Length: 109
Image (cartoon, rainbow, N blue to C red; front, side, top):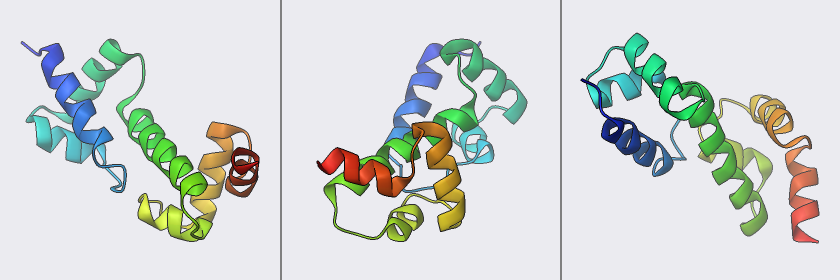
């Protein structure tokens, strides 16, 4: 039987690797469960899809870097596993409702 401990450990692992683009395949390999079963159980326990959880953790870490570090937005995107500046920009806007540049400016004021 699948335990909540597996999900908690998986969540910790994802949170400790915000610089990696962790896929569902990576998570399935890490836990030893099938992708289908893992995704279904993860959603039942957390109320979020596994992919959305991974993306959210990368976005939170990237938002922190935008505010704390004096680096380019493209650098932040690459450091957090986004394939391009455009992908990062679109994903960031969907999640935070503003561009990475606007977020940085607002949080630094």
